[in-house]
Length: 319
Ligand code: TXA
Ligand code: MG
Image 1 (cartoon, rainbow, N blue to C red):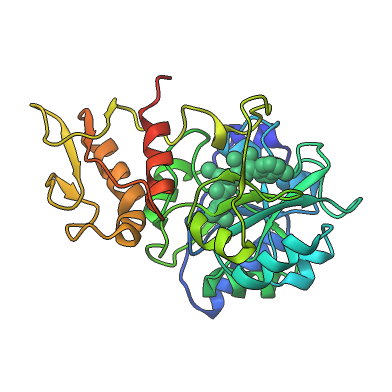
Image 2 (tube, protein in one colour):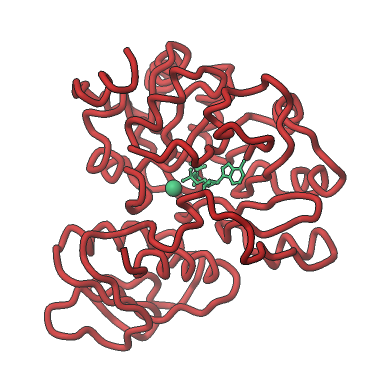
């Protein structure tokens, strides 16, 4: 089945239980070149065989993702990652310190290691070793590297529950493995190498990475081409408008609170940024479903707050 007919003919999306038979079924579908949404510790990813052009094309088709936007490859171990990409000393140090975990490294790709659709034809590949028991069991059972962007239609809010995946992609993907809500709640932090550069704030705080390296990360410069929707101003977009740093709801608004600023939901009544990150996308999904304009309380810009504010700015950006 090619990508176009996959889009045209809606397929039945299987909902798989988080048990041995669900894991085996997910692995088998993936080996057959199908798409399966799986939980990771950050968000649900839409996985497919990273070595198969056809399988990767199904990801782009299901998400309606611009094909110039490359994908993250998920592998079970540092050794498996070394088979796909060149590691320098900084990459070794970061992988050793933070894998498995919410860190993605962008490294020079080894020739022929993955489908060119994964790298969007470029010379680098983004890789991570996820730290979620189900993701790890699926990787072990499938025995192939898995390309997996967040399991949402391109430009929309990332999924932290199987229900979010089905809202966006039901009928477009073979299955979703239901592992309940994800723990971290925002996507992985993405680091480019030589020199180590912050490409996307995420689930691993920048402070932890800089402490490991012993120096500050370089920042992406303004001249760098923006080729990735995850780096575009408008992303994670709900249907309605989003107002930031609100201290109360205006009439009709759906209010997302934080700390003492209350609302229809509160990211963390105690002001805890880890808890707020875990609740962020579910709150945005709920706000989106309300159909009302959205207001969000201010969140401090340290630790995981950087990733939260990055996602909120993109959700609020003009589109
Ligand atoms: O936590 C996560 O990272 C989740 C889970 C599923 O692992 N995945 C995720 O994938 O957020 P996605 O596709 O939604 O975001 C990946 C980001 C995009 O902004 C993409 O452009 C960037 O990573 N990226 C992928 N490959 C790259 C490369 N070779 N160079 C630079 N950026 C790259
Ligand atoms: Mg995404």
